[in-house]
Amino acid sequence: MSELHYKSATELISLLQAREVGARELLDHLLDRVERHNPALNAIIWQDTHRARAEADASDRRRAAGEETGLLEGLPVTVKESFDLTGSPTTWGVREYSGNIAATDSVLVAKYRGAGAVLFGKTNVPFMLADWQSFNDIYGTCNNPWDPTRTPGGSSGGSAAALAAGLTGLDAGSDIGASIRNPAHYCGVFGHKPTWGIISGRGQALPGDLAPTDIAVVGPLARSAEDLRLAVGILAGADGPAERGWRLDLPGPRQKDLRGYRVGILLSDPQAEVARSYQNAIAALARWLEVEGVTVEVGAKPDFPTGTAMEVYTMLLRAATSKRLSDEMIAQAGEDLAGLPADTFPYRRRMLESQTMLHRDWLRWNERRYELMAGWEAWFETYDLLLCPAASSPAFPHDQAGERHEREITVNGRVQPVVDQLFWAGYPCGYYLPSTVAPIGLAEGLPVGIQIVGRQYDDLTCLHMAALIEEGYYRFRPPPGY
Image (cartoon, rainbow, N blue to C red; front, top):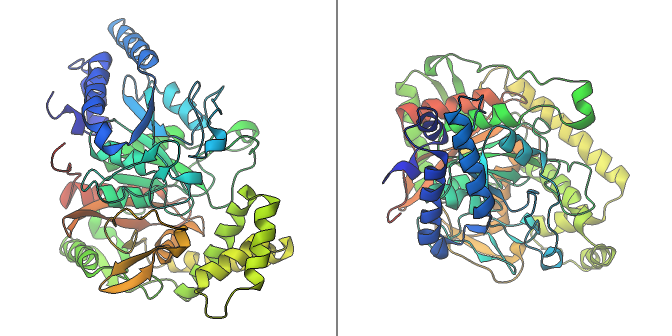
């Protein structure tokens, strides 16, 4: 049992199917690890062990009776706190919603359950899911298992930390600004941000929110690329009234093996300079890909300025999240914008402008987005994938002072606003593209991942490349001490 907790979900499912381990036995093993290791991490912030054990026992009985079982039958699973899970709090780290107890399951939770998963806990998040750190006044701070003085990422930070430390078999998060991809990168696990709209986010919302949010998606985090592919197969598809009218049919991988692939690779960009140690890790991956027969072009990217991509994404992102703001907060944003000094750095100005813009202004920004989306489509006629950083550096030290846009990190000896890293989030995310993050090594003793970006609906191509990298180059490695 000593290494059972670090096996991938697919490996664990194979053991369950062969009855080499029981669902209750596996659950109790992970619960024991949660009891021993979670106090130092604060990754899992809610559990229902009584119900989980009953579900695991029922799974064991079904398997013993030879009944039909689901694809995740008996697998212990956690999900991000922001997903409704019957009987659990859904607060997004906001004290005002401490009493918001879910009466039903979100669609994602229901699909995991429908596949036979044993949902036993929920994982830590930042306030309003709006940070690349995971801390809030309700649950406190989540730490990175590779270095507890550093962030595990956000907003799905608890999910990535729990996977890296071997506390759960599979997880799920949400992503509008790298909230799946960033924690996967910081903690050395796998995460997939799907094409916008292919996995339902219904039930991953605060009370009163029914409409889907522009740019935002939900998707899996795991310890292997195959786990991601399995989860996407379970989660993707029409939901609600859409089930009456459409069916999802994702195309398969664009190539059969590495030798067929043509990829562009970015090591850094003026919008968000990347640490040299991380650039070196990506460059090493590029050299391996070339040896394996991949056609690699370093610096190849779509034919539009990256600064334009960042501007458009930031405006649409902050417009999308402005729904959460009160009338008083919007009025204050207008006042702040009017008094903003001319030399204020671009992110702060764009944030205030987007929060106060008219709908017709949003329509114009959306039109600019679709112009850039056409640029992506044209680029993908030549290249299968873009491989690029997921952030500017490995995980940075905890910094909870002030507002997020006021904080800074140091990259290559120079101070960088922490929000500049949103460029690597928005380059694909703002344009509805799928992207997978896979670990590729260590930099400065901390894990780093590669972001694998594909065309809209080429999710399986992203996942295929992640699996090829995992198979031939670098697999999940557990942090020391766990």
